[in-house]
Length: 169
Image (cartoon, rainbow, N blue to C red; front, side, top):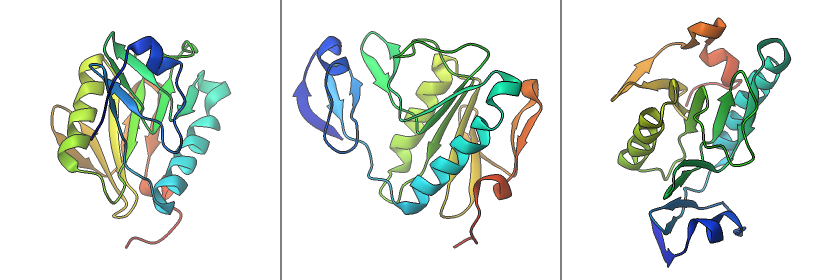
């Protein structure tokens, strides 16, 4: 959803927004969905999971971080995992993993578009996590529901029990 304000990338990168940060696409500010408690809880559990592995596997984990996909496009994944080196303050190289977590008011078509942008940018593992249904999806040009999230090159396998410490709805 556009906020209707056209600004430059430099202005955007120097601007803080009240509430949820905005994304930047082609000069327009885009509002993001308001997360609920399960979204926030799941985001923290995902972050903690990867943070526990950070030293052993040289992982650099961040959440809600602006990432510059191109000169006119900046997206903010819910969680990103970089490997093997730490990114710049506003990353311009793709993370190893980009994770989006569904919020109740997300439009699936918009979420799919964001996931595809991450994939086209070069993110090796693009995941969608639905904390309400306790389901995982991998973006491979289309969304594919999977039982386990895998990062084979690091020997990581994530099951629903790793991210969801509550019963399914």
